[in-house]
Image 1 (tube, rainbow, N blue to C red):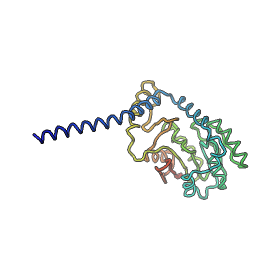
Image 2: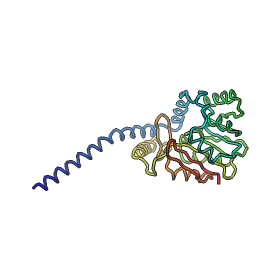
Image 3: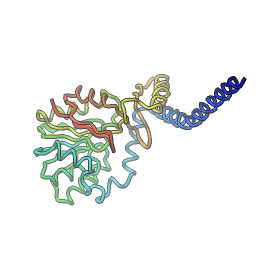
Amino acid sequence: MLIQIDRYFGFLLSIIRKGQVLCQKIPEVLKAIRTGYRLGSSPKNKLHSIDERYFGWEKKYTTETYNKQGFYAWEEEMANKYFVGCNKILIGAVGGGREAYAFEKRGCAVDAFECNPKLVAFANGFLEKEGLRARVVLTQRDECLVTGQIYDGAVVGWGAYMSIQGRNKRIAFIKKMREQLKENAPLLLSFWVFPTEKVSFRHTVIFYVGRTLRWLLRESPLELGDEFYMFFGHVFTRQEIQEELEAAGFKLACLVRTGFGHAVGLAS
């Protein structure tokens, strides 16, 4: 009799615990559904306009204080490890000119480009005021500047790679960079990255909700890892980064998950 009672209360306790876990997940699920709905119901050009408004509105990117800080610590580490001896650098999505400022202060010649007109205007004024030679060219969204020059290294500006929607678009972008690089030249990318190779529960929910809506609206499908906070971004696994680099003609040399995710590919 006592054994049956113990089993009954044990079973009851397990149900309560499972119910508690489920209740804790409800807010997470609702947030993921909301994000999936937003991504699924927004065509690509609408997400682009949100992105452009955010970076045009966020004032820190158009201040001298922000751009004169130069490299972040992780960028400095990558520059010291992979960009030593690089004299000529191509920088895409340069924003307000921070990376161009940092590389030119190291003695590098820099060609840079950016798709946000407000950031281009600020960057050119800022770099000229600082007495630097680098100038930023306005390009179309997701398009790589082709200069006819060959470079010792390349950078896609902080977090910009993840804002390119779609694997094929991302590969095409860095493939254009590869065509302008010397053999074994480094390419630095930065992005959101999963802490392990396992895709999170949140992003699985986002994917299925968003992909279903895109299918109903006959829009291009969502990718597993697509995300939206204040702007669109894609969260990567190591395998994704490696495959995209290899498809564009690079060999993955380094991937760091801690802090802001980043990787270096070597032109192969």
